[in-house]
Image (cartoon, rainbow, N blue to C red; front, side, top):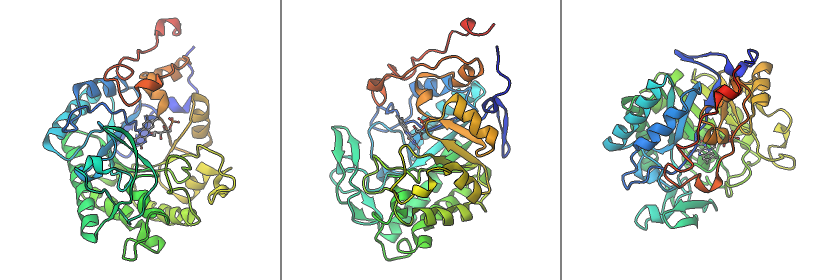
Length: 374
Ligand SMILES: Cc1cc2nc3c(=O)[nH]c(=O)nc-3n(C[C@H](O)[C@H](O)[C@H](O)COP(=O)(O)O)c2cc1C
């Protein structure tokens, strides 16, 4: 029997966009832009269109300029050809009645000279983030980067704006700024990777400056209700030295207060993957999403490890407005229908997450509904 008591399946008004449900497909880097120009392909259009029954799709993290690259076969949104490629994607999703935001990203110092003809990547400071970069020759350790000049920071902000314009031209419904731990923006927020002494370093206000300069630049192009940002303040692994520090909570306190004035589409928060006890953010262990709910007055999207049950529960409780799902969308293109009819989820093949062309990408079938719909 169809379950009519699931808040995940309710429509939702997101600014002037009407979402058909509150299930969001969160960004999944899948490494299928397998061409030197990093142009989105028809296969990618097919893959995203298969997932159009989500209330909203967020694209994989997408490079805002050539200096932002740090992972193989990830598409960009800074050239004409890339914009043309994205048009295929947005058209295919819209044809199936879906909505799609472009996720705009920059990996900063967590890249590798292999992407820059031997030149070092740049970051807030010349500090090795101690992460790994997926290069054409496999995973390689990060190095000590070059420090951005102020002029380069300003140029990068302009590049975000141009990427946002390109997203508009490509037919996207909005943009999400990728600020997960490990990426350029959190490299500025982190005490470990930002040792600058100018207006982009030192105080909480200075280290957070780039967040607002990027948002302000993007909001000159898009209505604020079509602009979102995604953070993972409690990420403990795979982020090198950019783990939470003693200023993480005050930094986010400051950011949330200011973001509350922006009337954004939503604030996207990734939950903790591990136990936070003994870490500088231990106090968030038992009230994680309510903490963000209390300190941010706009729409909140919750992420990480949600299931049909826990997704419905957090919406029912009112602690979030939308729930995003990443991994479940890999092998379940029809995730919304599976929730609707309580159909078991399929598991994805780990060997084809980042490689394999169509295999393990656009070939996961929808469920056999006749078995479930009476
Ligand atoms: C293969 C893979 C690629 C991902 N790529 C991105 C990305 O490009 N941008 C991003 O913000 N998050 C990315 N994520 C994180 C997901 O969007 C999501 O936050 C995370 O998987 C937790 O949600 P889940 O438990 O529903 O999978 C990726 C996750 C996976 C598994």
